[in-house]
Structure formats: C-alpha cells, structure tokens
Length: 221
Image (cartoon, rainbow, N blue to C red; front, side, top):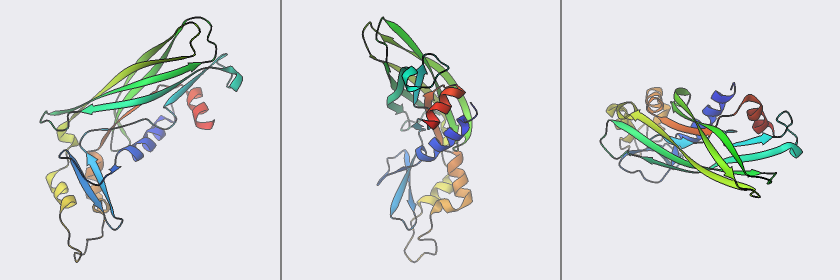
C-alpha cells in the first residue's frame, strides 16, 4: 500500500510521547522547557492505530463505493496492552488484545466475515522493524446485524535498544536552577538527545490490512 508509511508516520507522531504529570519507575519524565509541561516516555512500545487503518468497509458489488452498496463495516476497538517493562528480562514483551466490531446491511442467513489485520513494530517514528499479518473472523447468526470477535498481537524488543544511554538520561533529568543558561531550554532541542530518544522509541501499530481501494475510500470519505 503506497500510503502506508505516511499513515505510520502520523500515528507515530501522536503515539510516541504522552503528556503526564509524573513518571513510573520504567518511565522517563522530560521537562519541556518554558511551556509548563512534562513529557513522559515509557520504555515499553506505545500502541496506536494509524490514520485511516482502524476501520474497513466491504461493498457489494466490490467495484462500487456508493452508500447503497455498503455490505459490511468493521472497526478495531477496545485495545488493551500489557508489557513487562518493570521486569529485568532482556526483552520487552508487549501483548496486545483488541476487538473487532462489525455491522452488516443484509441480515438474511448466517455468514462468516474474515478481516486481515497487521501488527507492525516501528522504531524512531518511521523505521519499520517488522510486520505480521493475521486474520480475525466474525460470525453473524441468521437475522443478526452485528457481530464481534477478539484478536491479539505481540511485540518483542531487545531491552538494550529501547533503553536510553545513561549520559543522555542524565542530561535530560539533570536538575536546572532558574539562573542556569539552559533552564528554559527543552532538552530535546539538542539533536544528539533528540536522536537518542528517537532511536530508543518503539511503537506497536495495529490496523486492518487494506488494499489500495479500501485505503483510498477511508482517506477520502
């Protein structure tokens, strides 16, 4: 899918950092100079759904994208992630479960609908490390308009590559006095610090495995 990397980049931008007032022991709090905010970075991969890839529409006939031709609509929801960030294991293992809810227009007869989905590990916002494709099947009983099914994904990352170098961590967390020259400077303004944070940042992105026509429909509707 030609637009897939662009969607990944957008999702990474909104998922890699979360604003918070404090940090747990497996997180790093970064004071954003001069704006009164604190950015929290977790060693565990952030989990997100890229733009345009969180829902899918099937048409009947497939060649038509008219509203009257909509057959089945599915959406990815209820994402839950569990990560062993507080352990001392050499790998960070993130297990994600999610639900797919779907609605069909024609409720006559029982029917199974299968949606392919992907789980992609991205490093530094744009570098795709790995990608897995799975399938989730939903069963509609006769007369039933809605159906749901659960699925899961897994990410395993070496803890060492997701851990900031001690020198960079010290530079970020160093206490600054109001009279210091860099008291109001965001530590991430330093290219070396910013690059180190990006290199150690991972995301687990989930979405439907869409073809070009499905992606174009989501992007333009």
